[in-house]
Length: 364
Image (cartoon, rainbow, N blue to C red):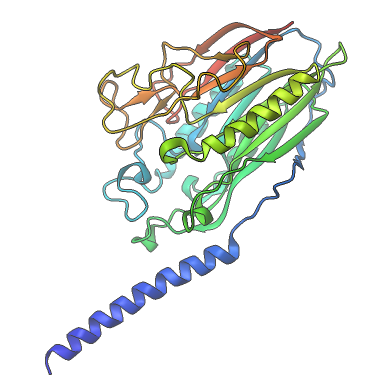
């Protein structure tokens, strides 16, 4: 008789646990954002007074700003304990750190000479960044730059860590922010193919491309593609579906006689680049794949700075020489675009788990 209440308590606990997961997945299923698979026009948030590209030499920056929450002081639970619990890692950085990281990004944008800024993980509003209006702040920091936002992460409530409902990741609206000194004639969101397995799919990013067309004086167009390919993708199975789509789109624009520049967070290393080049033999269990060397025609150029890492892993706060670093942020340009200079910007990962890459090209 004494064991009955104990059994009932266990049954009650198991029932509550099961009901909790049922509610999570029903809510996730019903509220899951389903972006269109068809190309979707993007609305200009801000316009540029320059309707035509008149310069032959142009400067670009790519930077995954890490939603303001992954500066040097931060670690991230998903890279540590995974989706079940946070352990000793942060679900979100304290607000003062997010404000510090955002200010660092704003200072960089204001002081860097570039015609195009291609940013990833830009929060419009999200619990993980304390609902600071980051995209609006970037727009204000770049007056007279045309600005677009392409959503790739929209969720009413991300419930992870699953065993810490009081500490849930929460609501997210985030994506790609593209800023240009010239006015695009078209800006289009392309949904990338490839999906995560259920139930992860309901709470993961819906990866996309932000493709911008800029008229040039010679009658051609400059096509600028802001990208952020799949992460947490063992064996690069999803990226193997995304890359052909990306390649076909870029090659089709080049076949029209246009100039094409792609840049962003590829979540892969360039062809032939050793993923542990900055820490040989000290990968700490991390693995980073490469873009296959024959995937793009050989006259297309991958532009990156091999001397500086662009990404650090967030299992722990950043410590130079201890934290694993690699290179996954870079550019790809069509054969009619000459790379004049490319360099990584060493910020010692103060403001993000990624570092900016600056590129100067000449349209031939």
